[in-house]
Image (cartoon, rainbow, N blue to C red; front, side, top):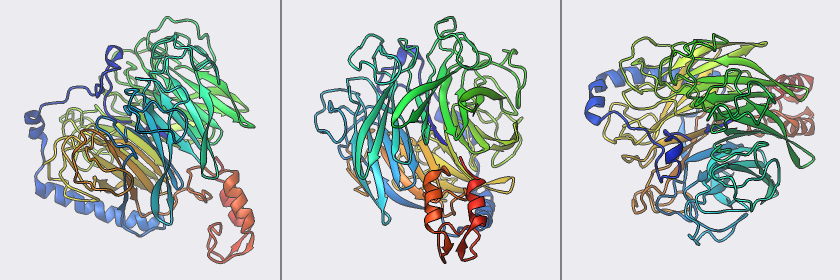
Length: 590
């Protein structure tokens, strides 16, 4: 269910020649003077916002919650430093969060090493935080086992239960497969991914993952996702022209067509299970820019795919709409993978970059399109009015049997030119969060004044909830210390009502949890914010709120079997955990 690039990271990344530039991942935006033409009056914002609050109250009640959304914590690295970009990637599972800082400079390796030795510029790091009794603390400081300068470890992160995967897209190893030679730096920017596992409170590295066809500048690890014993890694710079699943990996005839790789764990050992390519691979399509996984379903984004098709399973050969973007759905049956759907938005447009972010939870998919240009606001508005350049959009698709359809077209409640809504997205059950890291609001906290455009590129995130088949915006999320250029919303993740939002360019010099947010002494150090949406867990049976219903949840249910008032596994609140509750759990098995 983790979406990371996801899901995982927001912002726009430059092409191949600029990949090692510090902070060089953003495309040019419209000038402030141009953007001002799209501003709405404060009266319009307040009127629309009142309607959203009403929807939020109704929907929260329908989901079994009732508490108002609120910020819970402000997270900083234990070794905060300028330009580390802490919060450039985030993931959450139950009471554990992981945060990436791919520009961190320590030369430490492994877990909990010396974080003060800044001798490996931009080697990158990841930080693990845990919640106990409502309080967050840092549990671990993760580095690659072969940490080197400019590897960008932490560019992508994902977590499921006691397992974390971290991408290092500029790692240079020439090894292939799992746990190969980590010292062989013969394939520049080929990329790698690292798997860490927790036993009690202790984390260790379990695996070093490389592609089966490692190649220079493939940037394997640009996106990562995990659900249980399945990991997906994107490599949007991979060059094979082979279509479909497990094709010819050596046919390097389509530069940067891109690929994704599926790894599975059995008895603690990881192996590659599948090599995924688009059914219509094309040079420069960037398949693998984003990835997500939920159970036996994988979604892969390709932001530079050029088809002019709309909807589901349209004409893939009509390359008449440059860089419109696409997403591909793959499913697993008995260990074998196949492509199930080819997703395009209902309003395909050139350079919209559909698939920039993807997320999947059960039978629902969200795909972001940060350069979509409609001036619509809210849900299912007018898609044809391209009056707000790069305002951005997100699209929800649902599956019935094997058939996918678009369920919703989402815009922010204060959609404006250049906000890039959809640069990040994450979904869990009936809740989803979308980031817009170029949004300009000067508000702080939750559901503040959307008409205050006093903080250029401060960024925002938007929480949506589904009631039946209808989506509505529940919350407009801002940092508690909103600042211009902070890029709040650069990364987002949601599980069980807990939302993590990264602001990679926040500049506080604070360290740890809930430090001094007003100390802007370290430029672009980065920060991460934890919110509670005030809703009940959206997936019946997910007793540990890790976004997946599995053996852990079944064990909890069986342990509560019988008369058990106020038990978490008593889904129908009849005072007994029995076959009815077991059926509800098994009906949502991932």
